[in-house]
Length: 615
Image (cartoon, rainbow, N blue to C red; front, side, top):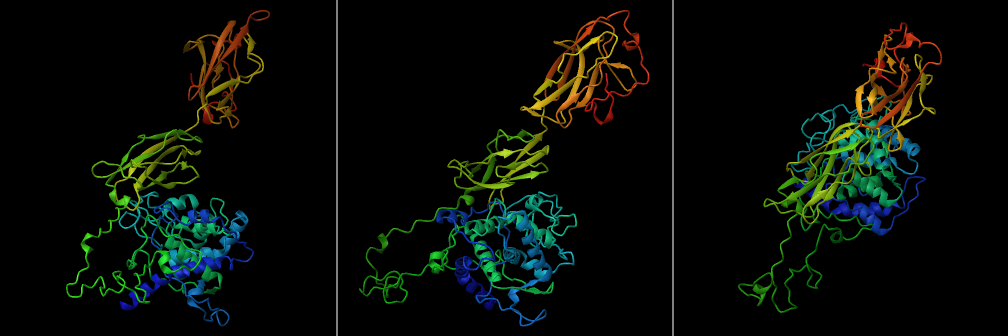
């Protein structure tokens, strides 16, 4: 046990120094062809100080904390089979997946400048390179690699978003595969890296390509230090995670070699198993910012030395300038006057997360929007103490689940928001995509296992708000004949053509009387019988509705055709029937006749699915 503890304490001591050295070396050891450009210092600091519990690819799951050797990698002494530094050996299939992912995003996102060594660094801390390369010939792990259940017990609480399809858990989510994606992230970021037509998070080719695209998101340029840090933190929002990944990135950039699958060295230390380090630490709510130079450990938030008495040896904080009183040692009852009067150090304020006793819905009970539109309202919750007082500065995570493509602004499915002074957290604006249906916005207190607030949402199909007659001339026909032109209308939504709009067309008695007229013009059904009401009509891809041929009937006069879309857009068209020029009207066209050999009316976009219009 002693060697293990010693190893962990040594690791705690060198973590910051190694990470700082890695950052300092990045500018001098970029991948070939990659230029380095630092952002302004203030911007870089913002990128490298993540809000704890924020949106991440892994759900901020635990990771391996082993650090690389301080020395540069030693290459193999001979061709394949020769021995080199075991930490620098990458399993053949895993290495191939990383390099192919780099090549793919070099074409898809040329401005990203993703080095494959970054994928290797993340693969190391997430799964130990797919458990040392234990994958089959297609790159799929022999057994699934699953993170712990994200049930709020020591981790974030994420209820099931995939029905157990990826992680086998229908109650909570778990990080999955060599690159440890949570199911909700994989649903939007998954890739098919090996061309088998599937997106499998347990396949190293699929997972590596997904990680590459994910890291290159938001138009990041990973040759820029700030963007590189932001990309890593988007994977797991922990500054120590950032430090660890940067350490491996620098190590792999100095040299790697290929080893057979299944022979990689497995890491042993995990972030959820580490003992708490001695001495003051930075509170979780304000993680330390990685320094670009190897600063003393006390400046990195890991160690604070006791005050010195000027002799070069650590003092006890109580020396009073050589008066013989050593402060902390009373020397058999000696007591320094005034010690009892010294004010005690103020107790640290409790973490806001720990003050929250419950989360309440403080916004709408449901959310509704039309496809492609922004929601008028947002999800709002209030974090409260047991007495009902609002808790300020608490971290609340909003997550969208469901089969619609509803997203928060910026295209995100989950975001973390800090409560206001009265404990209220409001989600960013939501926008509905093109997929209609239902979804749920869930709100939870980060790092707590309290009940969530769930707000249901619905995305409805677009409905036409206007109908326009397209015929250049008013429809006029002589009694006993058929109208020369078919009636055509256009459906629009916010002045844009609306395809697939449902509509009805009815010959009515009057503008204020929608009852079906029993006289005048008519359509014909599939059997050739007169009908004066058509249902199941839909506009075509251009938003146009072309009605079937109209027949005038045998009575002259003015008649009304009323077209209505689902949603209420209405158009009334006047149909004029004139008296026959000579002789009697053609009785074969009258409503009482039963024409033969007539086809089902075709609108070009009328009764849907080939159905006949019904009276």
